[in-house]
Image (cartoon, rainbow, N blue to C red):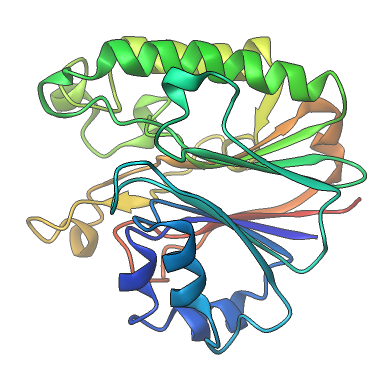
Length: 258
């Protein structure tokens, strides 16, 4: 199964930027989308009849606040079940998690909260990281988990272009966020598929729209495919598709031989 993740920075915007053609070219079996910025009916309306969407079932989870956050899953295979949220009401108002259950694994797509300018939302982010870890542990106790999405953290210095200038100053590269990611990997026993396959390689999945950051490759690796350790031997071809445009993020993927 080809499993993909993409923060599209607005589903209605990305469909105007060759999303259908890109979908046909990538041909994912399952695609998790983040930051759809649309209500559930608007997600379906945006994708309805679009070239490339034939053969996919579409599921989505939207925020109460319109035009904000949101996740979706496009899948060729009918899941056993689909559920939204992590089971904590105070954290489940923004449509940040969608989970599709398949016979051999759970596919989770997540849009982790950004700590915001001035780190004013860092306390919320820390609460989220703790609750999301517990959620993944509960799933993993039942069957292996694939976690895909924009985790809004560069885990290591190699994962962003300017680590020294951003450390403990910029959302996505504070020690609290790094520790949250370390806990997710360590306590939930997840593997960072791309980094494990490319321990010393620089690869980014997000670039600011300002200052020609993408052209200069001044970026961050914020988008991940994490898998339960017992799935690690089934992972093939982890990839960052940095030649694909349409958003300030690019897709990431793995092939799961299961």
